[in-house]
Amino acid sequence: MTIAEEASQSNRQKAVVKAVIFVAFIIGAIVLIRFTPIKNYLTAEDLSRFLETAGIWAPIVYIILYAVGVCLFLPGTLLTGLGAAIFGAYWGFLYVWIGAMFGASAAFYIGRTLGRDFAASLIGDRLKKYDDAIERNGFATVLYLRLIYFPFTPMNFGMGLTKVHFKDYVFGTGLGIIVGTFIFTFFIGTLKDVWASGNWGELISFKVFFSIGLFIFSFFIPKIIKKIKGEEAQ
Image (cartoon, rainbow, N blue to C red; front, side):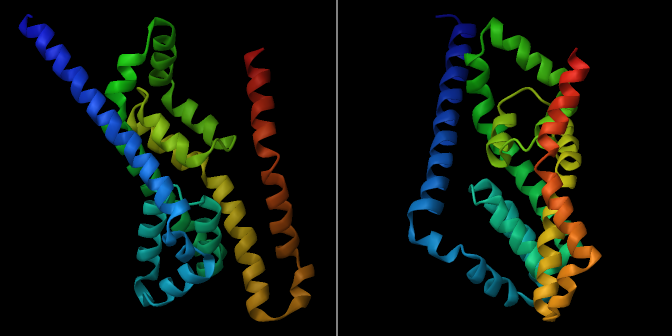
């Protein structure tokens, strides 16, 4: 066996080992969150009490919690709703967005570090052209998938397996999740403010109706984006 062949075999073995670690990490994260006693503490009430004990550090703790939660497949709606309920519509939006960005970046890095080499070894000529296309149009691809609400956490890890540049991934994600994040946090934060004030008359205020309208509109965003994409392709 030549030196080149030995090096190639060694690289394949390393890629397989890293891929096994990657799969084990994902399975372990899902099992940890879904099938162990830890899940009993991952409720809105328990997490809210935990953040209250953090005092002035609550925003930083929440951002870290969100980022870690993304990597461990915690439901994004739980984390986002919690941020809006505790910090309000506007600060909640900011902290949710920052936490989501850190989490998305970390998950991408895990996928790229542990899974990319093995994924590349499986790509044949037919799939390679799609991988190359994602590399060339990374920003547009990521932005489009974020706008149509492609499942957040699977996409974070999955994009790490492709050739998309990290810069394109980050900017595409950052821009793509702004609208959905703001709509959801504004909706939850507005209802929370009304609940906290006890002034139920505010339920018929413009702000409440506006937040409800935005929330309903958010469900049509994927269809609108797909329709625009389809018209551009014609």
